[in-house]
Structures are given as structure tokens and as C-alpha cells.
Length: 507
Image (tube, rainbow, N blue to C red; front, top):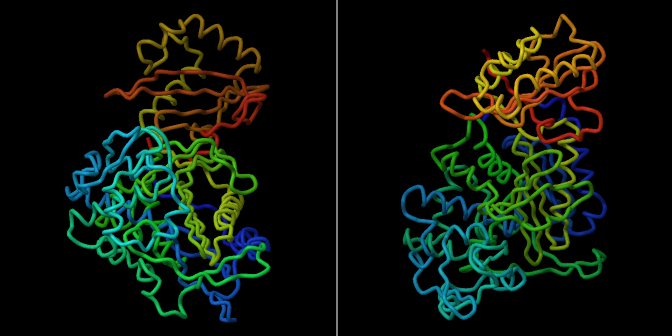
């Protein structure tokens, strides 16, 4: 892991990318909206729109909006705090903490664990529309619902299904092991230690003139109808929270900094546990593009967060929120700590598109890497040894640091013949080579390294892959011809490694 390095003059583009995301179409979707560019916990630029009460008073960066299902990230982090304290076992049946729950598949009771609930693969089906209007249900009502037996839409642990009811059981588990309301526990273990004083579980925690009112439109934003706040009862832990862009900026970096050498507030929740939140646990089938140019290689649900693998920028962590009258979205780039948050006070507001377009444009404009990779010392040392051997004309039989299978898989005489043909193709090697570090072009992981050796008519690209033994050895060695000064051969498509930022150890 490493702390993000400098990214260049991004500041000049911040307001522009927010205007691009919060465009006319987005503004038509809500009476009021706010979007912000965040950089490692600090709001760097804000764009506001409209009037949060519909009465002429302007939206500000301090306006409190309902963040709906973004609340799940706070619930998930609280669950891991209690797990780390030894109070919750996520791999035990949920009935261990919450007795009386009956979950049925094909009429038979099933065992469902807290981990399956947290990662949305419990078998409980999607329930967004129903839950939205039952957010204020009481605890006794919800307990009776689960006791009566809920049918599962899939075998537990097999498929992704977004279940609010399922995650609410984790709120009940928090209450069971602490003897306190889950909202109080979240505030005590997360909100107060992190200084999130503009974040709460109910809108009435703030004066009316500080919070956005909800609205709905049924004619594409031509007119808006006031939407009363839905309640915040037993299901409130999964979707009732309110916050501001500054507080969410702090929250995103608290989570994202776990991937750096200097994670903030390790006493609140360990970096290792925060990384767990941001690991895809349950594949999300066929993730669609939510905004122009959005191309995903994969996506999965972690713990209270969605993890995307963007084809260009690598890992993006995000979550949306939606309730009658509100729409919200937060997303951040793991490699740089750049993020965007967007709130609107209508469920027609395209918060995910607003934040997604803005973040993509920001990352493209700053040349953001898809990941930051720090190769092992042994990887770099082995690569330098192979580099010297090739430049000195040694036979593959004399190459150092090779694992014992390498020359068995491809004999030395075969490797020598192939390299000889390549050297003839490029007209031989240039005698004076640039320093090794300047010729390194990519690393797919800490155990891999690619570099160029300059030739007369073209270059060689050499790659080593290490096996993690007590004394790491080279398990893979390849050499290909590439155009002069290039890192890829003709027709070769860029791969993830080509977009990584490398931090080489000093040798």
C-alpha cells in the first residue's frame, strides 16, 4: 500500500466537472441539489442548485439532505466494530443474536448468517419499493413479520439480491448485543469520533430551515409535489440518515484511506476491517452503465457498499440512496482518494449519473491511475538481474533467480533461439541504455514487473512474474518485440497493468 501521489493541476477542472454532471437535465429532476468534488476528505469544489424548501431560500453546501440507503455503509461499519470487539459473529446464524427469525425456502427453514445478510446474498429478495413506505415501522411489528416466516427468493449464499429487510436484521443484532438502539450505537462508535456532527438518523435532528424538504414529480420536472418525510423506525438503520456533502467527504476518506500507508482514525475501525467493507463479496450480474462512457469490467456488493471495477480507472467504491422525495450518491476512486457526492430532493434526481459523470471527467482530466502498485524489492532485483543477463548476451541457462520449473517448461536452448531471432529483428541492442528505473513500464502486482530494453529498430519488452516463496523466485519470464519507446506490441490492447502508478523501492 502507498499514499496517493501528486495528480497534477486538477483544481482548475473541479467546477467544470461539477457543471458537466449537474447539467440542465439533472437540475430539472429536483427543486434543489448539491454536488461536491472531494479530495481525501476535503471538499474542493461545490455546485448548488435551486431552493431546498421551494420557497426561494437557496441551497448551500451545508444544507442537510436525506441520504437514504447510503446509511447502509454506516450500519455495516458499526457491525464490524462490534465484530472486532468480539460481540458479533458474522458467520453464525443470525438467529444466534436475533431469536425468532424464520426464513423459509421451499417451505423449509433455512440458516442465514450475518455475513450473508451484510453482503446481500441471504436469499431474501429485492424489496426497495415496499420498504420505502415502511421505513417507520415499529420494532414489534418488524419482529412479528420475521417470526411469521419470510419466504426466500433464492438459496442462501447463492445470488445477489438487494434486501433492505435482510440488512435491517443486522440492526436488530446490534441492539441485541449492546442493549441499546442501533442509532445510538452508530452515533457513539462512528459519528462522534469522526466529527460527523451534521449527520444523523432523523431529519428532525436539525432545524427545519437547515434541511431540504422532499418533492416528487410526475411530469419530468415541470411541477413538483411536496413529499412528507417517511418515517425512521425499525428499518431506519438501513435508510433514514441525513447528512451534508462535507460530512460525507469525511466519511468517504475515512473508508478510502484504509488503502494507504496513513489511514485516518485507526482507533475507530481498523484499516483491515475497512478494507473488508470495500471488497466485492457478491457478484452483481451484468452491471449496466449508469452514465455515458461508463464501462465496467465487474461489480460486486461488499459490506454496505458497491465495488466497481472500472475498465479505465480501476476500483471505484460507491453507494446510492433513494426514498420518496430524495436521491443521493457517493463514489470515490481507491487509487487517488478523489470522490464526488451528489444529493437532490426528488427521487427523479439522477444522483448516480451526476456523481459518476463528474468523477469520470475528473479522473480522465488528471490522468488518474487505475491502482498504485509498489513492487517487492525481490521483484525489482530479479528484473535487474535478468536485464543485465540479456544485455550481456548470457544464455538462459545462466539466468539468475529462476524457479526450478522455468527451464523445464521452456528449455534454455529454445529460449536462446527465440531471443536470438528477436535481437535480429530489432537490429541488436543499443549499447547505452537509460537507467533501469526509467525503462520500467508497468507492474500488474507487487510480484510482477515489465521494462524495455532499447534496440536499434525496435525494443524488447521483458516481463518477470515472481512466486512468493520465502526467497521469491521468477516463475514466469517473457520477452516480446515492441515499437521503439512503446510498452505494447502492435495490436496489443492496454491492460490493467498499463494504467497503474508504480512506486519502486530503493535498492
